[in-house]
Length: 390
Image (cartoon, rainbow, N blue to C red; front, side):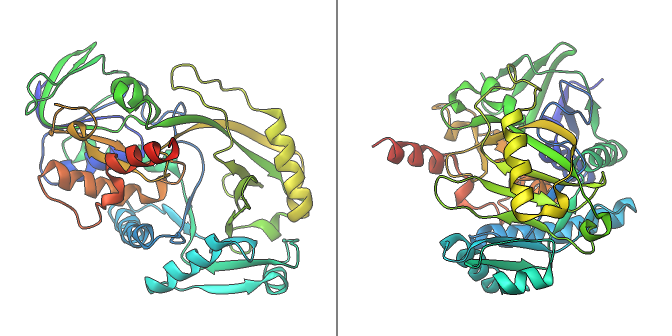
């Protein structure tokens, strides 16, 4: 087994497998490491479904999502598999919320298709919904569902086929950055060196780089499938993915049509308790399930059947909910410029996976990708923390 690589990637979730694939297809010698099997269900890149959407309240993310859409289609051509199922997407909630207007403006500014609906038009177009008269919706046809477990398995397989070495059940015991230009990773299977190191370890990132502990918050979130009463009304062709924007102090809720199971998947965004990757529970919170069931009774009564499945997953979130894609020396004084700390998570990262791999591969090759925005820098999160505490 080789001991020296052009690039080592720690963490074989969505971001890590994508980076390994992009680098391997460029002919780089790549080692992809994960402490568990690939894929696995202990982190953030597993399950039937994640939302794909262009709808964001900032143009940077709209442009990145548009680029990701092209890369999803390219990956489908390479693999011969359907990875993105378009369903259309709704951003909805009280019409006066600034976030809804910002989403519409960002979509229009990026030249994306968009349609606005008042409460009456929303319920005529999608009669599954029951909403108050002051609600409104922004509809985007370029939204849908991607499958994280399928995608991670595929990207790891493609990386292998392009020459990458993939080691499962191989945790990183220590990062030796004594020589900032030549990172070393110590594992139970030996020591590996590289020119560039990408640490895409999700909720384990604060453990590997303790200086990130104040910046990255790990939470335990609950998702649930509820059995629908009329399956045909909630299939992807008739019921779009949705994000319900909320007033301050209320929970933002998101959901999916029947996909993977004959039920609607629904969850609250960023409402779970703080935890760590090492101490997290797999126990589902009953109070959360009760709130989700009440939400469906109120707004989507046709989907308010019994719980079919409920599971937990980990969010790793910066204070701004922006991604972190910055070098080790930007976080640790005197650290290594040859290490990229990658946390493109915050509960909304999976849709960007094929594009994120490209961004990270460019970094490893010494190229700045035009979509590697300044908002992904570590200093942005630190400044936000400082302001919040003042």
